[in-house]
Image (cartoon, rainbow, N blue to C red; front, top):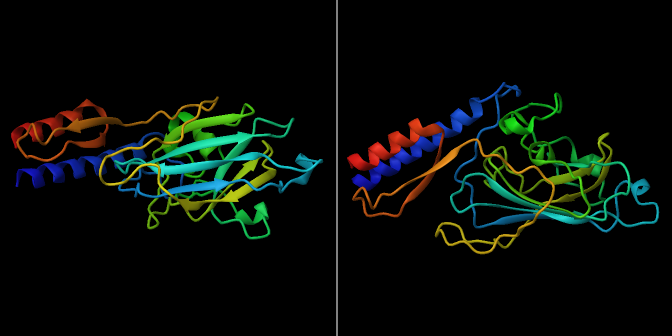
Length: 262
């Protein structure tokens, strides 16, 4: 009984936190702001690897392409998705470059134009530009808008995005979609589809393995929620600690009070 009450309270607090994050800042989407994704499967990973030939051949007149890939996997707690981005051999001029998850897979002929627009389940559209300090008001697929443009060669960055999803039933799911790398004027240089691969850590048992890491000039993601661990064992429930996202000390105090009361 104690365990079930505590878990119900934790679950409710997580949903409350999700809604509170979404409501922060101006509303930019026709369907509201992006919401924090929870219950993301963490036992699968997705990777999109760039092809050997660029879509925009003018960017590489002697042949070749940008080298690199985007790797992504949810954390064991199921909140949001961690992205690891690696690019090199970028065009010599024309930066800083941008990259986004797009709403349609790239067809077999490699036509990046066919990837459609950005992944945008909240119908925000491209303008006005994304404000990185208000990530929940940006398009879900606007990774460089939320986390930093490509400003170095090689470029390596790792960040946690709260609004993408590895759950195929979530509108923010990207595992069957694509990403496109652009010039600042939105000309599409190259693109690739996400495909499923072996996970870097196991989901469901809390045991983490090494996750691909990187360093670079991308702006680190500033998570708009704080994380609080409620120890069920301390409350006498006899189950493992539960880590949930809550906003502010008030919500934390409520969870702690619930735990102490059990």
